[in-house]
Image (cartoon, rainbow, N blue to C red; front, side, top):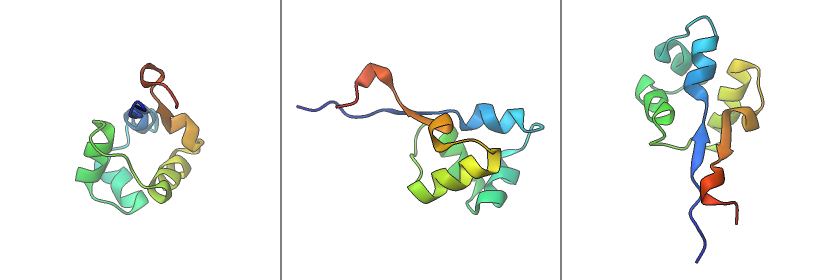
Length: 76
């Protein structure tokens, strides 16, 4: 049986590095609600590919810098 992939994200860290950007400001920039940003930062929601790309662009980083597969769960 395959292990489920746990996606780890660094959205909160990058948001705070950007002049203490608020969750609301980020949400408006990428076109979602603040609640969506809260859920992503808490790891309760994995964004679509399109949203992940918009988030990465908002911070000027790659998608891979924001999201990664947790090494504890493997990559099978």
